[in-house]
Image 1 (tube, each protein chain N blue to C red):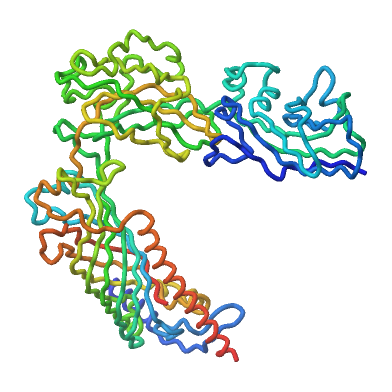
Image 2 (image 1 turned 180 degrees about the vertical axis):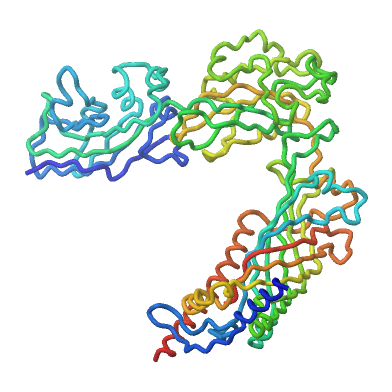
Length: 251
Length: 387
């Protein structure tokens, strides 16, 4: 009961309407702290992204080369994404295309072909995944109901360039085929962004007036990609299912 | 009216300079006694200079314009060129690298080996010198109001100490070598990774094999994960200098059963000495680099490797302790993938560090551009609002 009361009172305080004049003076922005206040035009979102990345290379193979070589240790990726919010209904949603890229690398000591242990030479798999997606972001919770969460969804196409090296050289198989190629397929994501302007509306308003940053947020999304070439046997499956988190700026 | 020799307008170095800047003189320049040619603007102002000759003096931190620096029992400047041919308005003067170093560091007339390969390692590091181009008469005095031209340079003929904790592990057609940077060095240009074939590996297990290492001896037994200090003759650099026993190397390079030495020694790679001329060395650039691959090697052939640091004068330092290993095939990820039935590979992937960075930079710049545009728009709106 106490917790419920606390949450209720917290929500009442947060949802209390404010009526402030707005503008900018020599001390910064004022009067624009109200939630959902349209402060300046909003056209795009920029994301800094990071998260685990374990490519599903071993899917549909007769063995598990990725697992055998690189083991179970966690691999990470980092990337960026830019969304153009072409269609936007203020205080409700935005919809538009987004493009992103990332980088991930798996590395391990290559086993000796004789099977007697590991060599001193690293073997690596490097992947640069790109994606072109449609992005739907719902602002309504944050802008109308004072819940600083903005769920979103993404769906589109993915493309990845990958290459593998043995030591300092590009890897080759026994037939001399070079270890570099590209993969493609579908990409999707579901996530939620927690707006940071909710923590300090005044600073958020200043960031808007000074830098044009409408909102800043931390986000967490479940990201999936199937980059197996829509089932092609000649395409390495470098897609993954993972969680991604990071910082998002709407400008 | 003053007679003036201005600073050189051109300095011609005849040695291979590479990335070495023109005002630095290294051991290689010293050994080949590089000729350095200066083009000097000369202004005589119609003063009769008969009886004077154009000379070049060198000092390390001394002003050679003072008579006492050039004469007397304790001079601090030394002549490196006398009676250079000249004619106004330009003089062309040759000075030899070994003269510059020899006059400053040792007594005149010393041998090239003495000058260019000093044994006093306390002298390691650059020495700043200044050349003075001046008119002097037979008494060693300049004319009244004479202004000498000068050229500042540095020399360093001693390479850095040997890298430490050298390890060598097995790779495919390569030995993977790692090391720690030497102690007490200045700025390094990189490392020279030197190697030499010892001969074909025995088909049978070598004497020290049979420990589950598949015949991989020496440093390669643990894929570089432990120190390979158990090799015969591979004690720390410096202690082995000059102690290599030729007798132990009998049969090196001969190949075949019974011809492969078990010792890790070399006639050409001597720990504690700089790499000898003709030794195969690859430069691993970057002072922070502490790994490199000796390649391309032949699988099944035993090699000896050593590492020497190279200072920013491009002087190779002393070779490290020797490490030996025999390259052998490894199974890279892609080979494993193909062996498991994977069909990808060999396709187009215009990838490398530069394109990916360029693409990332492009997106970042696009974002920043958008941000800047938004900022300007916000500023305009604010101005309108204020108005």
